[in-house]
Length: 378
Ligand SMILES: [Fe+2]
Ligand SMILES: [Fe+2]
Image (cartoon, rainbow, N blue to C red):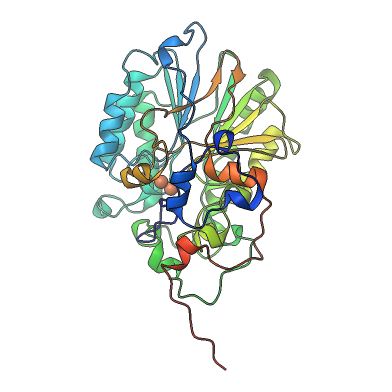
C-alpha cells in the first residue's frame, strides 16, 4: 500500500460470494462492520500435505512488507520442507530496507525450489537509506543484483513447460480514466502518497507524466527474445507485475478510503505489454499476477485471468475476513493446470455480480465519514 494515513483498503474485509448468496446491490453493505456479520468463513483450504509433490506447484504472493515484524515472522514460519519443488512468484513490495529485502528473499529461496521477483514501489524507497543511493534506479539495480546472488529469478524462464515472465512497471496518473470525486476535501497525491517523498528519480523522469511508467516498461524490451521463445514452446504462461494493469482491477473511487488511489496504482503500457504476450483475446492458459492495492482479487477480463494475493499490513489482515496467514501464498498452478478461482474475493466477487458505475460519485458511507464536504459558493 502506498498511501497513508488514509486506509483506502484496509477497512473492507474479504467476503465469499459462494456462501453469502447475495445478489446485486445487496452485495454492497452500508458499513464495513456489516460485511463481517453477513459472511461465512471461507471454505477450508486443502492442506499442503495432501498435494502430490511429483508435480510442482506455483504460488503467488505480493506485498510482503516484512519491515513489519509480524510479516517477517510469517515468512520465517513458512514450511522449510513442503515447497522444495515449488515455485513462488513474489509480485513486489517485499520491504523498504535493503537489509529486510535481502533477509526475506534469502528465507524464501531456502524454502522454495524457485523464487521469482519483480519490484514494487516500497522496494525502491530510499527514505531510510537515502544517503546510500543516488536514486531509486540505483536501488533497483542493487536489488536485482541481490536476486542474482541469491538465485532469485527476475528474468523470463521456462520451468517444466510453464513460462513465467516478470514484468517491470510503474504507475502514471493518467491511468485513471474514471470521473473524479468532487465536493470533498480529499488530500492531494503529494500529501497522501509516500512514494512522492520516499522515491528519488533522475530529473528526466517525472511523476506528473508517463515518463516513469514508460521507462520501466522499456526495461522489459530486453527480454523480447526470451518471451518469443516462451510463446512458441509453452502452453501455459504466467506474467506478473507489482502494479495494476487495468482500472477494473481496483474498486471505484467512491468505495476507496483514498478516492484518488487509481492515480497511483497502474500503467496502460503494462496492460499493452501483457496483451502482447498473452494475445489481445487472452486464453484459458493465460494468467497475470499483480499486487500493490492490497485487495485480494481473482477475475478474468477479456480472456486473461488476473490474480492478486497480498499478505498486506498486519492491521489490514486483522480487518480482512480470513486474514491471510493460513491460506497464503495462494496456489495458482498445480498438476499442469491453473487452479480454481481464489475465494472469497470480496471486491472481484462484487464486480462479477455488479457493473462499474463510476459516474456515481457519492462516497460510500464508510468513506464519507473521513471527509468533510467543501462548501459550494452560491
Ligand atoms: Fe504494498
Ligand atoms: Fe505497492
